[in-house]
Structures are given as C-alpha cells and as structure tokens.
Image 1: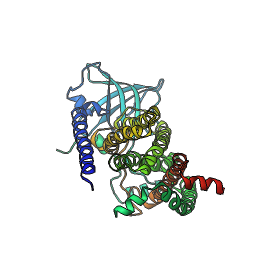
Image 2 (image 1 turned 30 degrees about the vertical axis):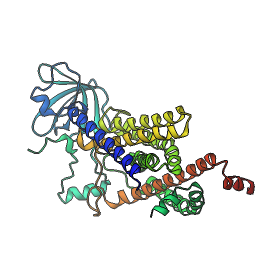
Image 3 (image 1 turned 90 degrees about the vertical axis):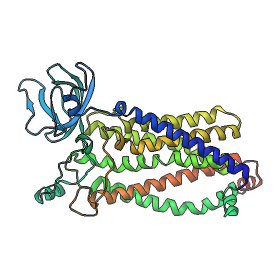
Image 4 (image 1 turned 180 degrees about the horizontal axis):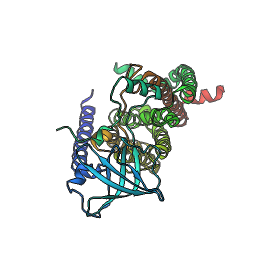
Length: 156
Length: 246
C-alpha cells in the first residue's frame, strides 16, 4: 500500500473509532432516558413522581385481574416478582393480555401508589412454538413461562 | 492479490463477470422464495401465543436482518473510494442507498403490521424501532446528499464519509434490545431439539426465507450496479459496442 493511501486509511479509521467511542458514551449516559419503561420495583421505591407521565413494564400478576361487570374498567397488578404495582385501566386490552403475560402500560402514578393507565400494550418474548410443543414442554415440566428477561429484576 | 483487486475495480470486468453470475443467483432465489413462502404461509404451525400472526415473522426477520447490511456495505465501498479511488466501489455505494431505504421500509412496515396485531400498537418510540427509523432517515440523507452535489467525485467523498458514520447506528440497532428495555423482543436463539422453544419446524422455513431474501438483495444490488456502470461508462468504447450489438 502506498504511504499516502495508508495515511488516508489511518485517518478514516481514527475518525470512525473516535466517533464510535463518543456516541457510545452519549448513549451510555442517556440510557435511563432511552429505556422504554420503569420496572415495578423502581415505581414502588418512589423513583417516579406523582402525576408524572411514564411507562411501566412488568408481568401481569397471576390471579390479580379483576374486570368490572358494567364497564371496561380493569384492575390488575404488574410485577417483576420483587414488587407489584396495582394498575387501573379503562379500555380495550390487546388480545395477548393475560395473567403471566408481559405488558407495558402508559400513564401516571397517584399518591396512593396506584398506576392509572391510559394505554396497555402486550410484550411477548422471543420464544416461538406451536401449541403441541408448548403442551409437551408443560407436560415435561420445562419452564416456558415466557417471561421476557427485561421484565425481570436484574440478577444481583 | 493487488492485481485481482484492481481488476475487480474495472467496471467492464465486473459487468462481464456479473452477467455470468446472475443466473446462478436468480434460479436458487426463485426456488427458495417459492418454497419458503408456501411453507411459511401454509405449513408452519400457529404459534401458541400469537396464532396465525406469527407468519409475519417470515417476512419481517429476513428484511430486517438484511437491511442492517447496507451501511457496512456502503462504508466499505466508501473507504475504498476514499483511499483507492476505485470507480466501481462508488457505483455500488450509490445504488445501495435507495435499495437500503426500500429494505428498511419493508422491515418497518412488516414490523408495524405485526405490532398492531400483537402489541396493540403500530408504533412505539423504543430503542429498536427508533434506531431503525433513524437508519431510514440516514439512508434518505445519503441519497439527498448525492443528488445535491453535482460533481460526481465530491458526491462520492461526501457520501462515503456519511456512510462510515452511519455504520455506528447498525450496532445501536443490533444491540438496542440488549442495552435498553424495549417493547421489541430480543433476538431468538433457535433450538435443534423438536421439543424446545423455537424448534426446527419454526426456524427451518425462516432460514429458507432469510437465504432467499439475501439472494434477492444480491441480485438487486448486482442488477442496479450493472445499470449504473452502463450509465457512467456510456462514453466508453466497450459500452458503445455493447449497445450497437443489441
């Protein structure tokens, strides 16, 4: 390689590396803002102000879903298996909404610690299989609860 | 090796060679596409959670994964343009940008349709979706930059720099689902066992579709590069002879 070409290539690689590092640092510094949702633990520990518009992400706690008989009002709890946050929502839930399923809800926390959701979205994991395979796995006692790992508390 | 490298840089040589390659790419592409689509639409078992909607994955994943190849491709071509001033590299970089924009749109659109049914929303500003949208805008930026500069060499240099910078976003897209919490699920890991999540009945047709779409990418790129060669080399003798022969 001719010296002037080698020099040019060196400059390009240097600029690319410098930019990557600076963008990496910016993204790292902003990671709390880039995260889509707060965990139930963060909300339960009061990291979020009352009335602040946020998203919360967790699993729908088994046995916690209560639907009103005369309206679309639904009460349930979302959990990361450390803390649970009660949620109130009036509206149509996604088809995938069920107990033990991951959800992301948008809304505000009131002073009593209840989350008033204006929108509830379903979050699924990256495991795909047929009903038969799922049934076989359940019969064999394999854990396929399908908890998206990002909804569970970090291992500590 | 350097001789081979500079030979590859000759548009005429590439035009002749790629003409011979094309049938060997088009025929397997067509066969795999037909097999893959029929398999995915008719024979893949419905998902235990998502039912029939899972079939969108067989379009979404191949297009999304190949659309991440464009910026690295344009960055390599751009580096070759900047350092060795090879004409062919800039031709590939030029035709790759609009193709990449189309592939990115297809990935975004198929993902939106999937999301509107399963998540309950067609769009959310999470790390994965936002960085993918950014890639689309970056590609539009590369296309506009090239058309804004009349001087071909200046346009080639400017686009090369933007492509190298845009490459960083590919890592952000790829690892967004691991670095931050998102609504989008992380990448699947596939299992060889019949009785495990993501068994072969799920991923074999997916692999067929991925290979088919990668071949489609290669064919589209080669065809548009050949077109660009003819346009830019229209005054060269070998192109004139080619035109007269037809």
